[in-house]
Image (cartoon, rainbow, N blue to C red; front, side, top):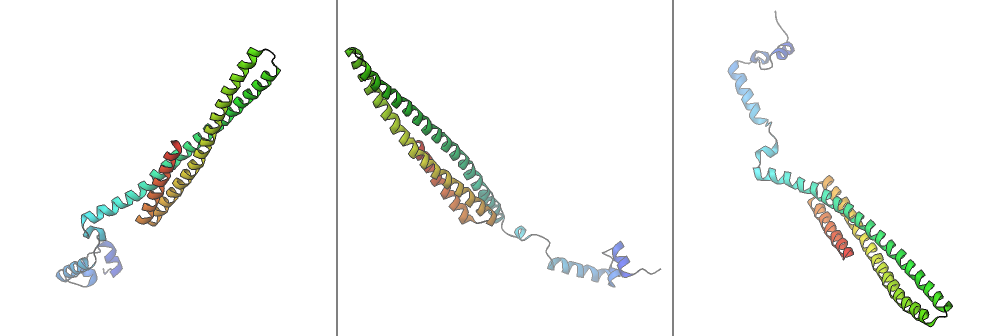
Length: 192
């Protein structure tokens, strides 16, 4: 019973008779083909340090957007804190100015000279306190603006880091890192 070539190859793909060769010729052909076709990856033949560098370079590119993204979240929380603080100073200043206005009215209505002097002294204290709160509110308002810029720079740095990751660009990764450092510096400036 004679089988066709395809049947013989299905049952035994390394059968020399299926190719019409002797066992020795088949072995020589097989060795020659295995030398010509390398089944190993190109990185397997390269230097081991280069393989490690390629993997660690990718790891660095992954870390940059993660770190800058976390810093962006922290910067946004700082921005929210600064806005709440500025709002609270404005409320406090408004309350003190209202108390100051009340003392002015009380001093003009009061006929007792001792109470007039006391109300005048309290007016001065309230006025100075209200001015201090207004200045603090203004300073914190400037800190809010700086925090906004810091958050935007960090967000831009995170986006650049993701772009660097997608394009596998080390230079874009360094740009993301630089934007992150500038954003952190501005964020620290807003705190102090």
